[in-house]
View 1 (tube, rainbow, N blue to C red):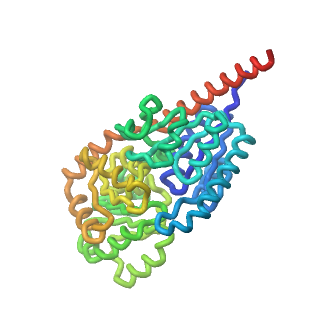
View 2: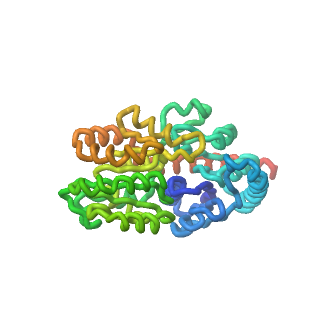
View 3: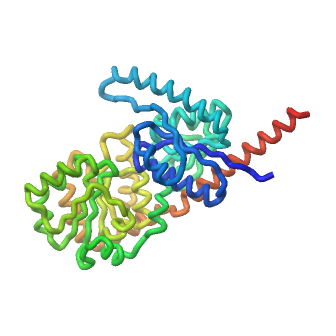
Length: 384
């Protein structure tokens, strides 16, 4: 009898969670084209748009994160967590998955907790070098934990850990271009070095301010091209301010880089937040990178991600609080240093795991096979 795989993938909130989740789904479909995959996300978050655009079904939970500054608002958050757990339980019973996969983000907590309570095997994809509280709790009942950094035995039972690396967006693997082709596509001068500044899909205020504070420095270094992704919520404000100051000819301002494969291929140096998904993409392409960890994440895990690279000479770190004064000078000095670029590229390439999504998909399907076999035996025994 032919197996019919049914798999839930839960999580999201940012591109750093959504792109790996979609890569895992694509890898599962490449191995089992008839597999039914259902995403469970958080209402009003990016995944509710991005996942359907990629061709997958998604249902939303009314989940929200804890407010660490205004504790009184967490009364409502606790209610939303309970409501999300009840909804997740109903979704799991109706869909009847053989595996539930959590990729991080608000929705993965209630979904994986309820799946485990219903004896559905769960797999956690931990992207970061420092595990968050939710994944540490979920790991107690998880069957498998796929990680991207060494030393994760600090957080999880060693017998459950599988080193797979972090999946990257499928388009990046498919659309890698030569620097010359990417430069031509983006209408850039291949004779000049290029710095790509990205603050994530939503943008980063401190990184944007660091660009504005150093407009004169950018203008004076006309032998360097700068691509500045402001993020959509900051775009109009940043355009207004930079135009008022006098936008340098060597600075391209955009709200969102739609073809990141081209932008990364063209860039000689990337300036970025230290999200695990982004780091995995830089490693895959061997991109020299300056990491500016976001201070607004749980357990300060982006700083820990960044330092894991800095300690092996695979990245440069600039603290968020020092970005305004140090970021652009550091970027300009680095992109002009061919030896430094070469060393950073060589060291970050050692971290690349281009087949991460395929490895995780294999683990997911093995868990599904074991569950199907167990359920088949149980039904046969009940018939007797």
